Image (cartoon, rainbow, N blue to C red; front, side):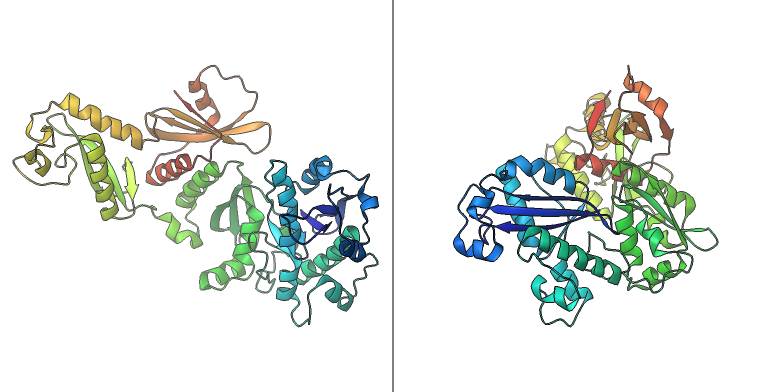
Length: 455
């Protein structure tokens, strides 16, 4: 969805100017489906030269609603849409400032039809609305009034959409989308029909074989990025070989990440070669030696054993492990970072408590190791992560038990749960591995979830 917007103001500076008129036309990519047009009382004086330009007088806005009275209407019509305007920064920043004064953060992706026209319609002497519209056969009998300019921008936007095969990517709106090179079985209409929601998507060749798996918070925009106008050899091949696209909505970005990782390893699509391998090459592993001490060891991931932490390089792993040794007063020798027969170097400096030479008992030492391992295992041994569901009536959930990832699933918002253990009845079980540990840990660090329930 798009909203094509135009405003009139008391001046050109949003810090000391105010909106006097606003027009918003909601567009579904084919036609206008809703509109909102209103004069606005700026609660300030309109200078004569502005009146001579727009025709809006102080008397006209005297009985008009102030912006705060129409703010909810603006939010409603703009919901889940892309903000489109001619010189979008002007209109968007004025509206954003009006909302900021109300204590509300107005935040939308934007497309500027001036910039887009320069990209898709080169060769015009001027790209101002008053100059380019007549050259394109667009009439405007109400120049410098919000509705007149917004409707002219609607027509310009439709020309630009058609020029770009009916597709614009709000994440990169000024990148040209070319239908050249698309597989004969894949239509632009199918790409346009893809959801703009979070999930996992699948590219298939003409034989129905899976050739690529990806995840995105906006499936359609990511597909447009893949197939729009690729420059790399791999990208061009993917575009030529993609005959169909399917998807699975997840709601939760975390579940999309986990699902993508699991399915790439399981299905081994042709164009996911790099992602088939473990994202982290080095793992931190733990084991108990014959004397009862828990030892830590950095070694390459073998894809079978589950590491307590993962790193891209051995150097990164050593640096982090030295840091954890200091924080938890561990022994360098029992962590595999020092070779010697008479205790570690830190023991010789009297900063190690002597587990390496048997002076500290295994119980005391192991308690500190377990504190570190607990920290590395998502901060809790047992944890339910609640996240956004696929609709407003459900929640996504990921379950961690005994420091290990069990799986994910969904539950109704109004489900009756008497014990955290019952969450396990609603998940599909999956194997834990270094990649899932990396994915979940990063998600928790960034606090993207809705709620955590330790148990």
